[in-house]
Amino acid sequence: MEKTKKDHLLLSKLSYTAWILLVYMLGRRIVLYGIDQSQYLLTDANAEAFLGMALGGDIRKISVFALGISPYMLASILVMVVTTIRRAVSRSKMSIRRTNQVLWIICYLFAVYQAMAMVTQLHFDPAAGPAMVVEVTAGLQMIAGAMMILWLSEQNKQFGIGGQSVLILVNILESIIVMVSGCSPEELMLPAACALAAMLITLNMEHAEFRMPVQRISIHNIYADKNYIAVKLNPVGVLPAVFATAVFNLLQMALVFARYLLRDVTDLQWLVDKLSFMEPVGVGIYIGIIYLLTVVFSMILVSPGEMAEQLLKSNDSLCNIPSGKKTKRYLTRVVLILSLISATVMSICVAGPLVWQFYGDVAAGLMMLPSVVMMLTGVCVNVYREFETVISFDSYWVFL
Image 1 (cartoon, rainbow, N blue to C red):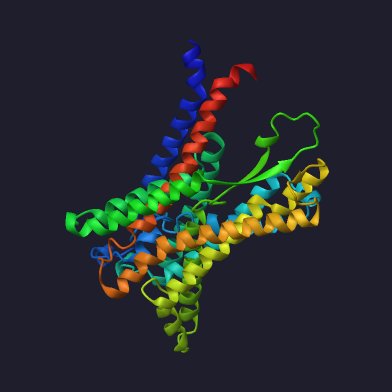
Image 2: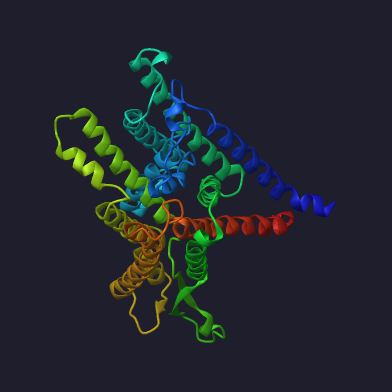
């Protein structure tokens, strides 16, 4: 009887997540209205396609969920940055409900923009009806799909396990299956070895900590040697790499949409061609986005300023560092260095396979395996930690 009560919350959350994933998988199989599927039978699987699968899961981008979680991610970045800029007092006055409303509005605007840009790249069947009607219908379907994904993510965050991470997890697993299918053991040997190295490095950085001793105000503190502030060696995990893919895709869509509107400007086509994972310029921009997002996310989530303020209010301090501005500068420097190390490791895992393609050493379908495995490892760690939290809550719920 006690066992049944204990497992009730965990089983309930797992069941809810399973239904969320079922709806999500079904939505990715519903093809947009009017699509000429014969044009997508021989879709080339390049680096962009596999990285895009981490966001949408649909390598051909012709389902009602073609936009994937990209609008949700972009909206989350914007809400996070704006919320952080506001003072703590102002943030406290903004309810969670109001924040979610803002998130939905921003997500909708991004979905509209991305749908308008993506429609210009799709191939439609002339027999489906007037071109304008078919394009508008497909665009509305993609917008509705993006908002549905946002609803699924929010529902899973509240009643399930993993939030939007489980959707990313499913996408990444499917991309790996597509990536390795049909490959010989000889072809898999080098990418698999690099993927294993990327996984081990990611696991180490997810669990390693940089500890800063804290000097507490206590005359007889027998735990003085155990008082410290810890910051993960990988402060915000590998999600900046996934978010960077969403930002990169947004830049691509912006150029594609501009080229569609300004057909007479020939330089736009050159920019569209260069902003690609198949070009050194595109790879460099993607790596730059990873660095930028890793530093920004680390400063926002770790928040060295608020950490220093809390130490000051409690009359505690870091050992040999005065409280106040000097502590804030020290913590900011530590977080910045750790975020740069994290970004460098992620960039090596991502840039290495992309550089291989310029020398033709690895097939296009395999060169992203280390990057995808790195993302998979980070997402699995996040989901596992939430799973552990639910189990711990189950163990104590009878006392609450």
